[in-house]
Image (cartoon, rainbow, N blue to C red; front, side, top):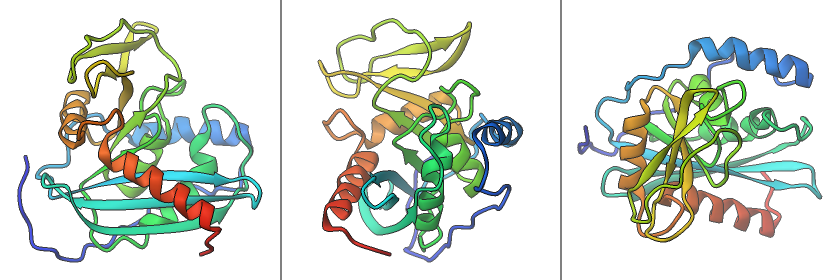
Length: 238
């Protein structure tokens, strides 16, 4: 459901369900434990606002710069943007992206005054070896509906979707449908959409196509990506 709402303040709350100073083995255990809290059914209800979130890594200064842009939905009028930077304290380990990037993302979301019902992440969600990618992790910690919109495939197999915008094919791993390969623009490479938290795959696909505006990457994550890269080039600190 879509609707209109006055521009009222609604702060984001971050659930403290675990620490961040952990080993890769401990991080995998946390993913498996928190996966039990993940919901794969529709819970957003009426969607008044959506957000795009992304992170730029400044490896020279060993920090992650996270940006969040909130839009009124479905008009997609920007109503707020917030950012935060945090030191990189976790190594690069495939499948454990959230332990490297989520602290900065959570710091940025903690500043958001107009909380979105749905968050689009430039990351994997359920399409993950342990079925708990960054989009799932972020959704559980914020208790918000999240959708993973990845540019590339992490795991799974799929047929090529049709060439027209809106065409999609199931992404399957070990016989389980873990996401969808979606053509967001006619004739361009597809993106990989998967559930994060509190949303079905069907609803996730619907919402992704609504926020696409003629480009391959959905507008919320595309604009968040451009913004954090600009912040990185300016060497800003916060």
